[in-house]
Image 1 (tube, rainbow, N blue to C red):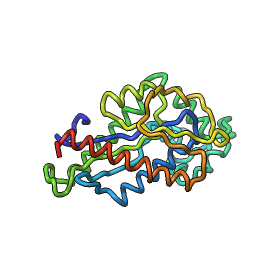
Image 2 (cartoon, helix red, strand yellow):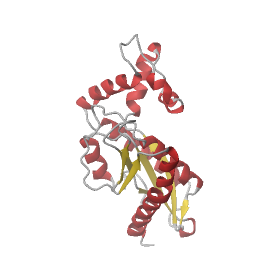
Image 3 (cartoon, rainbow, N blue to C red):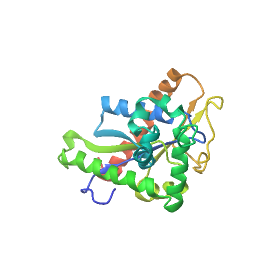
Length: 233
């Protein structure tokens, strides 16, 4: 439970990770958010779901500092991923991703947990808003559980902080090595036993089938177990 939240507020993060970049983490995240937006009720549990980025502060700072050089807002890159490949000649970068990586290294060298702390603060604010709209203890409307989905946790310090606050659900993606990229911060997490492993070496339709047939039922079961352990219902 997060500090500062009213008693009974439940949070069950899902961390989607891979040993390589471009393995399909954000695609899976988008499917989870869409599914729980469309079908929030699962037995006595009502699930809300949202994507969070540990690196969001880096992207915001990059936009604020280097907007003059063609660095767009984070939302722009979410809407149009192709923008990430554009060169930034004024800054000497082959792409905005290289700029983000350098800035991220700089900030995490000063404080490795900064991204996780800022994301946790946003999660706390979101959950407080969600619970202000419900009546605690009303079992007829179900137990509300917020599921933050995080796709860019890469540092052991971030892992330590998240585990100190929650009991996250870990979902590992195994991508097609002909499509993925190995970047400097990839593969640093040492998670022995992920809760779910997704094979993304096929088509997009194959990935969607795997998410709906395997991942979502397992996540729902994990959320229900948390609600039962906390409320005994």
